[in-house]
Length: 437
View 1 (tube, rainbow, N blue to C red):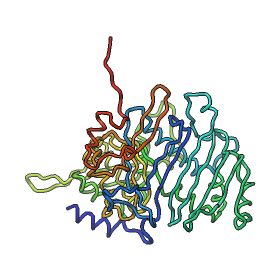
View 2: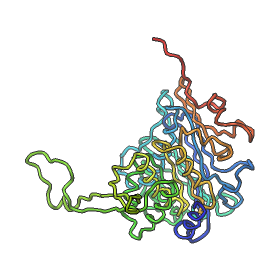
View 3: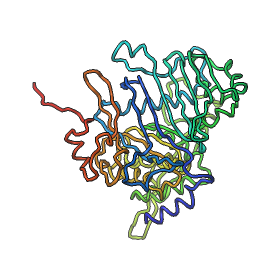
View 4: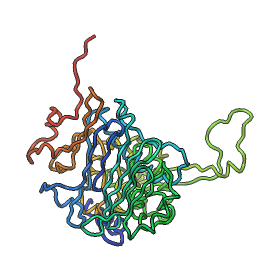
């Protein structure tokens, strides 16, 4: 069944026209954000480990990881890494819409006075449309102090722009006349990458589009919101066909679903006395109804039962919500980042999701899945490479989080990583002591 599912998905939904593996995240660095006072580096370029080579994404001569699992104790900083990445992505996307004087949603390390007053730095290395980009910026809540963009159209980087001292710009002589016209349209609290692209700058468009379209971050709440939007836009049922296959492969007895958008209906809640909803406002109100179909065997044969989505288990609802995000990532080769992927899901379902991204058969377009988790079943070198496993550990004396890879410890290929983690060999576990009353 799994083989047939794989072939069907590749033929019907997942294959994209054009070159494969032309979009991916290679590295993300952050300094002085939330609990990460010092630079944290999440590197998705594969090392020289020979294990699971067939799962790696190819970009020219570089091999790239399709999945990364991040472990750590509660309050160690796993979600802070997710929040820092999310804040950087949203700032790039929304920067051109900011009003003069608006605050930038950046939170530095607050546990010492120097860091409070210091700036936050974000750096990205990524590929969009076969071009490798290096992009980063330095900012605080008031303004952007530094920003840069380089493109690798060959083996060497080419400068697109550099920004220093808030509003001092540098370009190559070839691009100077093209780019300097956008300086006056930018402000201290905006990113030049976003401003130039908003004014149809071709030199920055590709670098910006990766942020706008090819990376998304999710938690349980945003997954459900994104699910509703995706179901509404699925006019040709392409998403539905793939989602049903994905659900059935995960052993959910779901044969179909029915999604209906309702307009102009009174919301299902009691208005205070004397209040009413204006008809013009009412016509703009949308509500959604989702019913899930189950084929049930009875004495009279198989019958289809429809249940409201709200009556499904929390685990079923969550996995269902994953389907649009996963399917669209696999279709387009995008990167998705998930906070607490195992929240409400059975460990086998988590492994099933990760396995889809780890396989070239089900992930032919090189999509990437980055997630944090407490699920130790994934700490298995027969399933993940050593460079696919990261840890976050916080020093409770200083409040500083540190990010590092399992490969830093050079464990043997035969090492029982799960056992080693549980006994504290790699850190990143809670230090639980006795209770004295």
